[in-house]
Length: 470
Image (cartoon, rainbow, N blue to C red):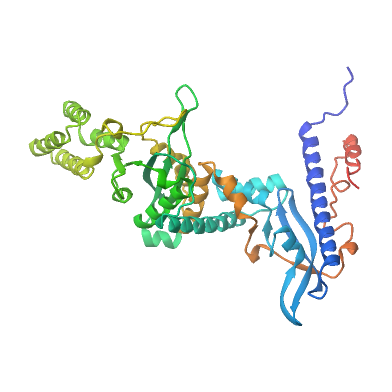
């Protein structure tokens, strides 16, 4: 066995190869864009487009920042200047400055859904070799969130006119709703207090078995927002009508904790409300300390004798001498009376529910607590996180799409992302693409301008490898 005199770490080779690859990729993209710009310049209608020289711009990509030049034109009609345009930007669908490529935009969005804006910016900067600030990452999320809000508002308008575009057909739709309190910041903190409830809703048409004791909800959609009850119900209905053909729905089952805003979703006799069994049982445990009374209340609930159960709670409240215990009984009685119609679980009401499609099951509802954490709580609650109303809503929309496996399709439909001008600097150049010097800035060309340690001569040979394309 022959041993080398120097120990070489593989990660050094990997980092160097990565730098070479992404630098060469940037060179290829820049060359393609500038060659396309030259082709457009030569083939343009010269009577309509007047050449006003080239300007330098930068696009941020997963390979890093790619600078390139493109030609600016004045558009004339009947001898009158109408506006200015970059034919190259029109051709590749990137009008304006401050572009993030769609791949980089998607990467930023996903990282922002998984962690803080600072962590997302740091990860992007490390992976792409460019500087992305946390403010730029935040701006990408806000820009997309605003467009998603417009989409949801439009869908809500269609749903209110019974013109939803959903295509998924189901006879039974399950809905679950709950709220989560998030800390506020800035002027919203002064206006609303330290925290505000974000309303969250999910809808699905059943479940499929994915393991011995595991099930996955099918065709799940989600919606979250800080807004008031009436507007939230409209938004939620728009999200549902955008996925499901609501005309085919015969029965709706709604599970919630009894909050008044949740009950606004009961619009007709096809909607059956159930008090979430977790919250129901939690209320009993917190309010009743006597195990015998607790068992009796539970037995009456199971027997569906709701009136007698409420009477027992009232009697216990009047008979106890402990003022604190009396208040707990009264609070429990009021809670159950306000949700009397939902105390009996839906699966025990004897309803004639249509059979589920083959391979799908209609399971008991009660997964909202898990979804609250998965969709919103895991990212937006805890860790001293604080939100503005607008910023929290925008991120929540992305989180809902991510955890219902719809984020990729939606992002693809949105097209390119443009940042505000303060993140971009556009520089004029006086030379054509053919006159651009071979080295600019620090002179990186991807093959001959990387630092190589002096004791690693074999790395110098690797760096001297010629490009695959000339």
